[in-house]
Length: 158
Image (cartoon, rainbow, N blue to C red):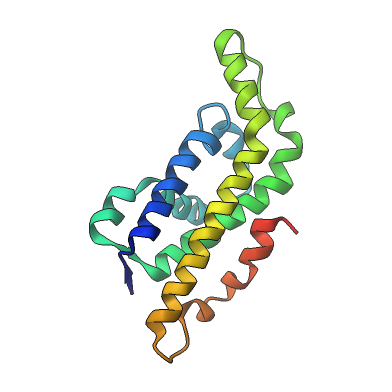
């Protein structure tokens, strides 16, 4: 099923903008690349956060968006567990204005990661509702993807 819902497209835009600006910015990206995440997951995250123009014009396949949300949710969980506690130690020092900007990025990273998780949850809930409406008495598509059952746990951090 192709999703062209305006709310979903706006959420994908917000997710991508927030990810590029606050999660994978020039100060944080080097440490993110140290995470033990497979290439397929990185590719799915990139598709979710970088390809908004394509989605805006053509729509987004529901199954593809669900897979992207699962990959991004795993990223959130892994980042919380592996990176957040030691982030300050992993980043090399700088000087001048870069040092101040790097400190700001590090100090706000936890709350920015939480906002990213909240946006992922918001789009997931929206997609499930769309999926249920379009199922028309049949089993909604999201119920056939076992990985989606862990979304809440991955995004909340338990």
